Length: 230
Ligand code: ADP
Ligand code: ADP
Image (cartoon, rainbow, N blue to C red; front, side, top):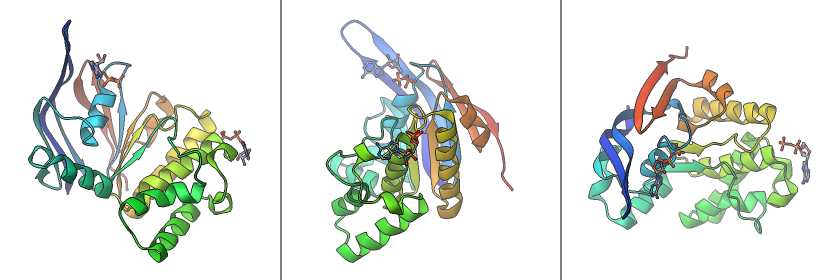
C-alpha cells in the first residue's frame, strides 16, 4: 500500500544569477514498511528530496501525495499537522535539545500532540526500552555517546507512531561499527512496526540493508535494486 507517491516531481531553485534544477521529473512510490536507501554524490538533490517528502519545502512542479492526499491541497497548518502525525525525522547531528534529558527529548513530540501524561509515560518508556536506552533515560545529550544520541533521536522519531521515518545521513557522524548498529536498530523497528524508512547516506555499508536502493545523480532518480525480504 502506497504511503507516499511522487509524481513528475521537479524542484528548481532560482536566484538572480542562475537557476538550479535540483530534482528533475521524479517518480517514486513509497509503500508501507519499505526500507529505502538513497545514495548520490554531494549536490545531487538528496536533501531537496527529503525536504519535499517532509513537507519542509514545496515542489516547483508535480505532486506529492501522502495517504492519497495531495500536499499542495493543504494549508501550511494542515501540512505541519500531517508532518507531525505521519513523519518522523532523524538527522546526522542528532538535533537533540541539549537542556532536556533523553527521556524529555523523546517525550517532546507527544507534548506537541497534546498526548496525556500517562500515555506519554507509557510510550516514552516503551520506545526507550526498545532502543536499549532505559538506563540512560535521565542523562542529558552531553552525557551520551554519539551512538546513544542517535538512539534517542530514533526513539523520538518513532514515539508518535509515524508511517514513515526520513533519515538524513544518520550514520554520518558515527564510527562504522556504531553506524551498523544504528542501521540494524532501524531495520528491527521497520520490521516490528511496519514503519517505512528512507535513509539518505554516503556510507556504502548501508546499501546491503536496502530493500530498495535508489540513486540520485544530477537531480535524476534511478531505482538500482529491489530486494524482496523473506
Ligand atoms: P545533496 O543533498 O545531494 O547534496 P541538495 O539537494 O542539497 O543536494 O542540492 C541539489 C542542488 O540544488 C545543488 O546544486 C545545490 O547547490 C542546489 N540547492 C540546494 N538548496 C538550494 C537553495 N536553497 N538555493 C539554491 N540552490 C540550492
Ligand atoms: P559511540 O561510538 O557510540 O559514539 P563511544 O565510543 O563514544 O560510543 O562510547 C563508548 C561508550 O562509552 C558508550 O556506550 C557510553 O556508554 C560511554 N560514553 C561515551 N561518552 C560518554 C559520556 N560523555 N558520558 C557518559 N558515557 C559516555
